[in-house]
Image 1: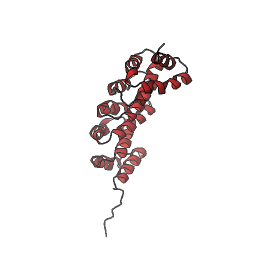
Image 2: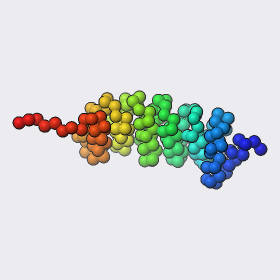
Image 3: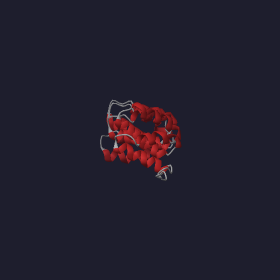
Length: 191
């Protein structure tokens, strides 16, 4: 049995300790394991998809489209792992899927998607600003948190508008964003 085969058997064993022990070896194989990991991403077994993503998240080179596709998986733990992997592999190709993931029903997925958008930075600003217009409240909160993390001046009008919102959390992130941009001063009109 080849080393690759042994590692894949361990990864898909169903035993978390054995699977985790196989991760460094598969990461070390780099591109040599990618075809097999891609196959696991298509597995009907959730555990196989998750562990494949776990390995890919640690690889220096990874096909971003695999991670993006996994953000739409039916299983929440796979979407969580994909969002975390995209934090490790920031790529502008992931922006639309990550912005969409801000509306995910799972809070961890949406939080990790916001984190990934922060790592991507300025290219994510326009779609985040667009999302603020008509998204569900939880997505708007994560979008504002991402904008705060990115600290791009294009978000200033949206942050100022959010100060007038009824949501204390949205106001908090808007204030934090304005502070990061150096706009946290209070101006008083002299008498």
